[in-house]
Image 1 (cartoon, helix red, strand yellow):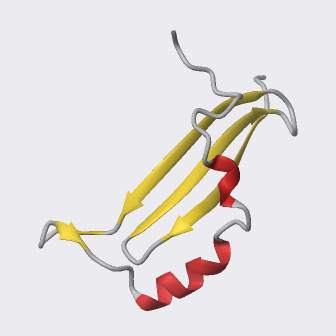
Image 2 (image 1 turned 90 degrees about the vertical axis):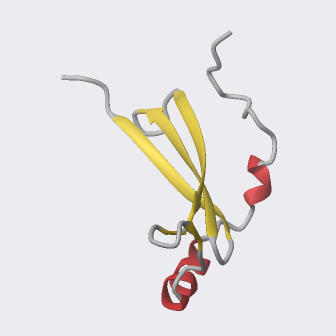
Length: 85
């Protein structure tokens, strides 16, 4: 049997056409920090091949999910990052 892996995610920013979020991976509950991934997603109309605004109901339901202090992610790479090199 392998290690238990915990992934925590948070929405950092929500704009009418994009969303920015972070995922952190830890060994076990509160164990070693294994990785951090920050992602920016853009809502795309695949037919028009351009960015478009989220549907109003999706945008509205997503706003409460944004973390209170996204500034803690402004420094990059985070101190715990395992970078090659």
